[in-house]
Image (tube, rainbow, N blue to C red; front, side, top):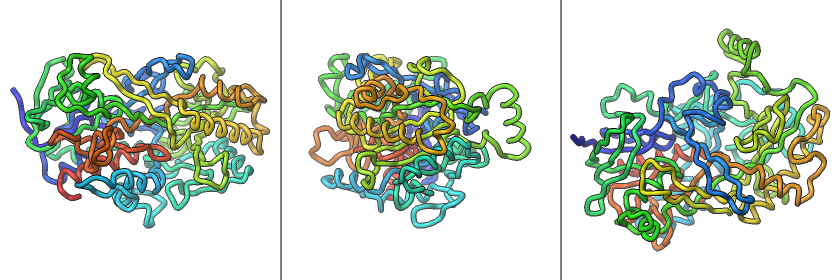
Length: 539
């Protein structure tokens, strides 16, 4: 038997949760189909829990890249949330929006649409501000009454403070608000949590509606394809946990929010995509959209690690008697390491033109933190990692089908650091923060720099280091991007509508015309919020 609702949201990640909540509040009956697990789990709720799961967890789905020729054939992982709330349930919870210029750039890109809607900073700011419940800030940029709880770190490790001071000693200003008037400088991030508990999109937007009869969330539902009739998206096929196939119809619109790696896969399985590529897999092409799966953008991240000469940082804080002590401190006093996501300090700098717009973002977790395929490169022990991230990369990758089997993972080629400008920027960022490790008060606590090789910062050494260690910053975007009318590769118009198909929109990071400078979870939620307003006629 088939069933009918007003709207179907495919994917219960950050954008999908927000879009669903907005549609329910408009009075619509909404079904959310999420392939992953429930978000209610102690390790997910605690801010530092992610570090126990990042390299292996059922709450993650691990996409393996195609061999990257420009990285000497290396294959690396791109973990994505496999849980209600998506990335907001498994990420490090950093609250970042990017720069106003990011969205003014979108506005310029989309200016050529006939049926347009504003995407400039003045247009998106009310969505950010309306969602935000900031515990410290309230001004024209920040809100304090929204459902998304934003807080300063509940605990700051001494290593994080030393990092901030070391970067200040190099002439960078202290920045008390990376979402404020200027992004440049070094300081402490704000996080999407409160009192030691994660505030994911599932908690902030769906939990308040859990008793609303107009909202239904189904977990462990793998969408197979979107069904079209007369070029209108009318229904969704999905398999439940037992493997049974179901069809559900939508009287209104279908919202695709499966993430930048799965959204293009589902479009292509539904006959929407590059006709020649669909023909390779014997999929009938209903709408030939060459841009589906193209323009994959991700923030490349390269770690440098240093071992310390004392018991500094978070090494073994989640084990044995330390874990018991930290748990007891949190239980009795609501304080201690359990109240932090473990990445308290960071920076935005331009290593080549110090007073220009930042090109590098940095994080400083007080642990040895490496990707799965490089874990054996550095001994685990007391130490710290500084990761450098190119915030506006020029490299572009793609997502393609592996087969017409909906259960097959897509083929992903992110091409991190393939563009020479990205590599040059990354090398300069690495060199800058290697120098920071040599500054007081960090220098006296460093036993040795483990990677890149201690004492070597020539271009060839750093280039080889970047090729070996570059990884995703967990921000894949742009694979079904918005664009102006007449843009051959634009999958969506400015209202998030799939071109050539009625009743189908995309509201996850796939829709980004270009990636924002900084973490992407808050922008994903903004996209979901605007999508709900567009569908409901509020925009």
